[in-house]
Image 1 (cartoon, helix red, strand yellow):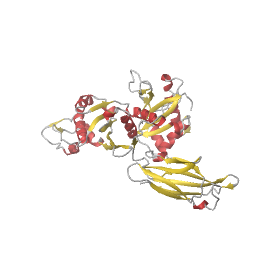
Image 2: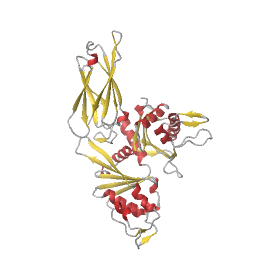
Image 3: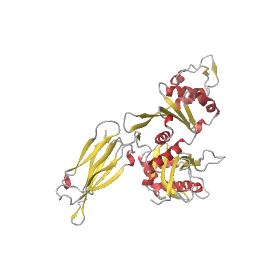
Image 4: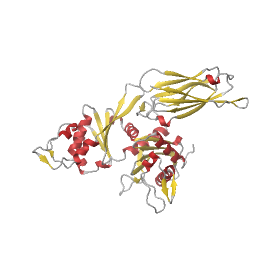
Length: 426
């Protein structure tokens, strides 16, 4: 890798706006790119403008569906449109960091699936950013990386995050299970969108609110003591009480455009009593930037596994001999999104009748061994053929091993016979 590849970049890519940040090595924190007095949050429109035509929007939705884009009477693949957007957006880093190139880029998106991620990686490859220099994570993982890079006193206990974009209100609570080594970091989510919509209803509601937001819809709207509407701040306070009930949350984060309102200014100081409260719109882009530092340089979080439901629950590996020494080859790291696992290795059997794969669970339990049958090529002389072993996943727990007879040059041509073995990693 050339010395000019130094930038650790984070991007928060959302439906309407995008944010970009770079880890500043002097400040030791992310700095927003494109920030100005008129644009303090450094928001970039998630759109592509070709010439003077109407801007192309809805890029994330098109990336999810795979829909092509009409441009100048021609259909253009969404991957190329995304590539244009990425190239133009990432070029903004040159203003503050001229001559420096990207070492690692992490893109945070609200949600993701395999097809969406594949199209994103294809678009990035079109501008020279291969998968070894890019990671795509969802907002939950970005949130976890952000918190874990803060001072430890902020996450000694559980941490809560309210995300409100003006329509959808989500609560995500970060928990750390220190009974394992490495410690497990996860997020539980609750959707309070419907409960919060009560504040927007025109019906007349009673002056006194119930202690729990779960009973909001049971208010007697015909009560004699009514007023025109219940303030959003009061409803939100009830939601917070519901979310934190019987929980020991010492830090709260508030993010999203929906909180940039007067009622939030009035309510937040009350919610900060007895805990630390932080507010801002750069949490996800900062978390993505910290993730780039974690992925691209020496790991700071080696004692933690940032875990989510779409991640592989066990570390898959093999013990092999290489240069006269026994080494471990990792086929699938634990805590890695299942749809990003695609590992291929070449093996030379030496009296082996099967391939042994070790599975070390992230959570608890002993190391398990799974044996893959290689009998279709046992008739060949030992050490005179190569086996290609490819590992992919069907879902977070189901690994698909593809085995191929590659032969050994002209002396022992391969049959190209291919078969598959399935392993369920519980």
